Amino acid sequence: MNGAYDFSFCDLTLTALPQGALWVGDHRALCVSDLHLGKSDRIARRSGRMLPPYETRATLEKLDALIAVLDPGMVICLGDSFDDLDAAQSLSDTDHLHMATLQAGRDWVWIEGNHDPGPVNLSGRHLAELTLGPLAFRHIATQEKGEISGHYHPKCGLAGGGTRPAFLIDTDRIIMPAFGTYTGGLRANHPALRALMSPQAHAVLTGRKAMAVPLKAVV
Image (cartoon, one colour):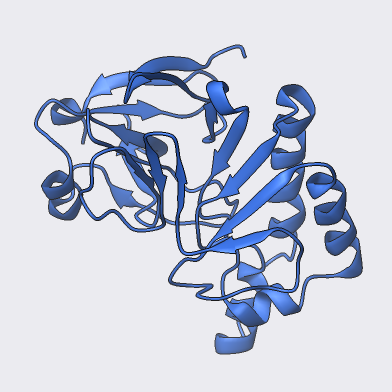
């Protein structure tokens, strides 16, 4: 895929896609993290503050576009796929149909996150974590070798201001960027992330082109 970044991890070639998803070619698996579907609904319920209710549609359309190109046999949603369990229950009929279309004919895995700690009323496998060859997919990093996790929504600062979602990668782990449309993030140089990643780690910034930079150089 144009603009993607290939790298070696646990003796596999993985691909960081500029849209913020991870492609595991040996298993024809597409991994996305922190979709946070229904976030506008959850904010309205809890605070009364209204946001444009389009983030679920926009996130599903972005995922749909990747699936159309890659045709994965497996899709792994790496936790916090929904902003909370009530948001999962309140998806519109249109969004339910869209999800069902994306899932058709694929092994779809929902990893539990801290926002959605339990099964939702959608088909697919609902797991606390998934082992795929040498890889362990879970929502929050535990510092186990070979793990791929999300949760932190890492972002890197840009020259001139602004931030860009980023993958954090070292020899033992990958922390995924958030794929969802309405998501904040944690700076990649935050102490919590520095503590998880080795000094030799690098960040792969998303955008028009996936761009790798040493983690120690980002702001």
